Image (tube, one colour):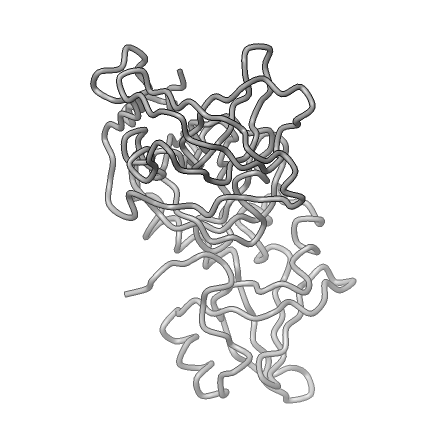
Length: 310
């Protein structure tokens, strides 16, 4: 059975013999290789271990044959691992082996045999492909893109998606919603733990590294884990994203509050927390971030068309 992965995680066709390439073509296996050029005939060119491979523009991505894909989306594949199936292995006019490749066919297979069977709340592996101010675009399989909005990256407020993820990073997401065309919107915050799960890693009296998330007149919000922030004294000279060390004065589950004291505001280095997943597979119907005794309820209902944010 075909296993569908993010682009860059398939078997490297440039390391295969011609007999192995023929077998992969016969079985419909998805392979990958580095695109070497986008030529004047509007096709991607590859070297598959000495065998020339070509991918016509219409085969470079789903929708390319209808004009829905621009040249820029294809020519930026040059120098990058690109997945495909081998549609034929023939000979060129000079009698040399020639592979005709299709990324669009690999994407179609991925969508029909894998993605179309998923629903909101399902957890899946993704890879961050590029970042915008409003969110990160992720490969959910064979280069098929889905949006991870900034407000679904954590319960703690962040200034930029780059505060949480980086291009090329392999991450886990849950499907927040899907539209009539089957396009996904993703979320990650439900996988990063509830308030209680995150707070359990900390004890009053500890001093830990934190990241300033906002500076208000009444105090400074400092993140101490990707889904957990506390409030320290107001420090107008601090800026969002700055790393500080903080003393944990108290942890109050009934109010979902952590009181902090800033100890060192001049750590002199940037910091970003590694993602720690409390859920790594399966399906979520409903997720409650809040503690049972808290009046403030932060809940995601995956049956709803959007993830709720308090």
